[in-house]
Length: 325
Image (cartoon, rainbow, N blue to C red; front, side, top):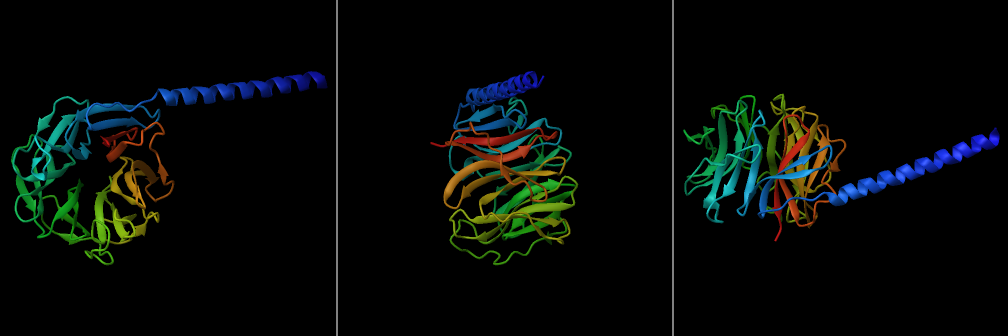
């Protein structure tokens, strides 16, 4: 009996090792079969978080930036250079989620960028350089009725729209207004605000994103200038400006966060670590835990990820991809 039991144990162990080896082989083969589709230099991509499959939704030979998706998950809005590479050729465009129905929403000689959907999907806020500074404008979803919403007197940037509030960066700090442009409140007061060092931006706070429940804002703070790209960390603060909490202490060049719709996770791009360019997709829990690189291993080194956002069921990431040349 003991000998028979020993034989069975040996067979069982061999079976486990065999099938484990088969599993590893399948995983490696599956990884080798995955590719990042490529057409133009720029594209809007979809990454399935479960199987890591990547698909190309829209391709362009001109620069894309500032990707945003409406809450119904039907339409993208983004900035694209059209008919030229100067800043004045940046226009706001929209697109169906399947890549069809391209629509150019602005058509002028101004610098238009950084569009975001209103919570109900009927309007789009964006930045436009029409006078002395970048200011916050708003238009209907079809591009009509463009109007100035707010001019702080500084370059306004990094806008986000949630629960009747628009968060933005002004004078290197995080500010908040009502969606009609009233009731300006400065939310953060960063150390060395607006002072220039060796980085490509002055010290301060940038890229505010309001949580889905409208109660908190996550933002990035330029804390050091050892790297020309800037050394940033993420913080979280309540919508009324109290209870600031540090989420990271990496000092990477990181920013442009996006909340998951559940409010449990944050996705963002690390563009550089020290002076080494990356443009990888990272993720962390909303409390800063489980900070990790989620870029699939099969992504080539010359493929840069930008403007990453969640789908409304949190199963997919949409992002802008650039093939570095």
